[in-house]
Length: 123
Image (cartoon, rainbow, N blue to C red; front, side, top):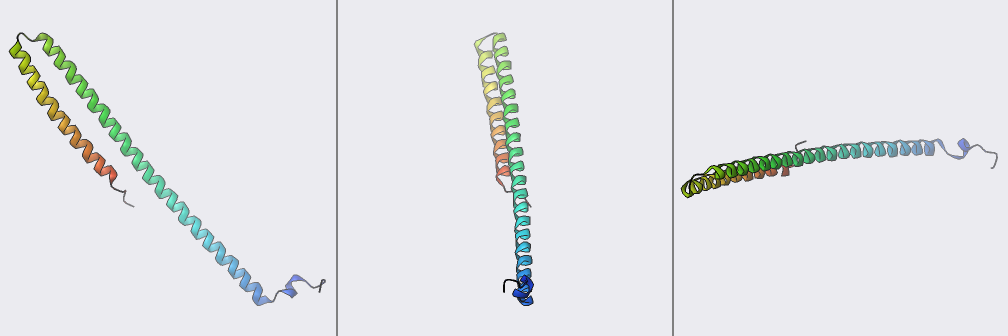
C-alpha cells in the first residue's frame, strides 16, 4: 500500500468532486471579494460626499461670519458719524432689521443644505 501512487488511492470520481469543490469555493471567494470591494467603494463615495457637504457648510458659515462682522463694522462707523439720538435710533433700527433678515436667510440656507446633506447619495 505504501508504494501505491496517490492517483490510484483516490478514485477519479472523488478527485473530480474535490476539484469541483475547490473551483466552487474559489468562485464563492472571488464573488465575496468583489462584493466587498464594491461595498468599500460605495462607502468611500458616501464618505467623500459627506466630507464635501461638511466643507460646503463650513465655507458658508465662514462667509456668513465675514458678512455679519463687516455689517457690524459698517454700523459702528455709521454710529460714529451720527449727528443726534434720532439718527442713532434709525441706524440701530435699520441695522437690526438687516441683521435679522440676514440671519433668517442664513439659517434657511444652512437648514436646506443640511437637509440635502442628510439625504443618502443616489447610487
